Length: 200
Image (spheres, rainbow, N blue to C red):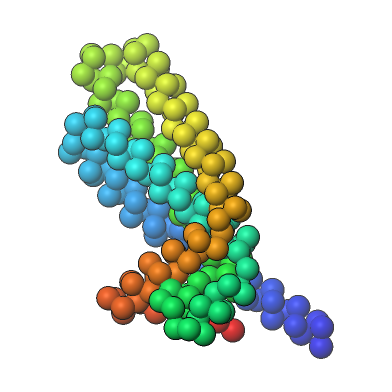
């Protein structure tokens, strides 16, 4: 009986891993194409802002993933019983914290890191071209500086986000639950029927 259960768990794990891998591939391709297309059509200052926005998205989703693993179900059950908007969705998130965290941290978080690196390279090239130094030391200096800045913002932001996620996990997940509830009301999306966060 235990062996059958273990086999089922392994199959579910493999299925989920493959699903995440496919989603990551598609999202990474889409984000890379969109960001590269946008950055090629804007001035470097706007491009720099876009890079920082991408970094911010990665930090926020990393915080959401940590908050999901740190939050408890009980506060949301009480709110769900009173039909509080977003409470049901919050329960779903916490109950499926491992999958939710995997999506937020590993999929969105890692994609943001990769895309921000690519985007920063485009911005560096734009600045270097303006300074007529796209192939010289100016390019190298700018590339090292911006890459280091993006890395510092990412690591520092995630460090702050982790602290906030642990200390305010209930508030963060409840906010996420309300956002998902809003999306459900205005789109065909239904998180209770989504394979990634399905209630078993």
